[in-house]
Length: 291
Image (tube, rainbow, N blue to C red; front, side, top):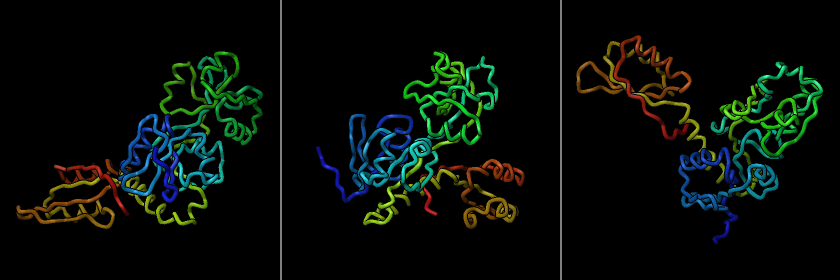
C-alpha cells in the first residue's frame, strides 16, 4: 500500500454517505484525476499535489482542526453542530438540505411554542438546544444516534429535530415539518495553519479550480443570430460579463451574438429577447469559468 505524501495538500471527505457521490463529482469537475472505490482509504491525485482521505463525516471537523488534514468537505450542519476551530473557505452549492422540527401529523402541536416542556429527539443536540434557547422555549432534548423519525411512534419524544432534503422519510413515518432551524449545504473548510504554512500556494491553486466550477454553475452561455436593426436593444438586454461578443455573418445585415447570462435571470432575459423577435437561441452549459 502506497504512503501518503505529507508534502501534498490533504483533503478529508465523507467516505460513504449523503455527500460522497456529489463530492467526488465536484472534485473531478475541478480537473482532479484520482481513483476511488468503496474500500479505499485514500487516493493520490495524478495531476495535482493532493491526497484525498475517505473518513466518517463526523470525524472531518476534528481532523481539520487538529491539522491531521489541511482541508475538509462536509455539510454546514456538521460544522454548526461541532463548531470546530477551522476556517470556512467556500460554500460548494450542492448537498442542500435543512435541519427542521417535525411532529406526527395527527399531533395537536401546530406551533413551536406548544413544544414547551416537551421532549425532542435529535442527532443534533447542540443545534436543537440553541434553537429552543434562542426562542425561549424550555424543552428536554434526547440525543439519538440512529433513526430519529421512529421516536415519536415509540413514545420517546413528542417531536424531532432532523436533517431533511426531500422530506420523503418524514412522510413515510407520518411526520410533518413544523418549522426550519437552518439550511445546510456542502462547504470547504481549512486548518488555520494551512493558510499560513508552505502549502498556501497549493491551497490557492486548488480553490481557484473550485471557484471556477462554482462560477460556471451560475451562468449560461448563449448564442444567437440577429439582424443589425435590433443590435442596440440586444446589447441593453444582455450586457454579459463586460459586453456581448458581436461578429458579422456572411449574410449581409446579420450578426452573431454570444454572451454569458446569470442563471438566476436566465428566463427573464430569454423573455426579453423574444419580445424583440430574437429566435434560434442556442444555450450551452459552461464547464468552468475563471472570473
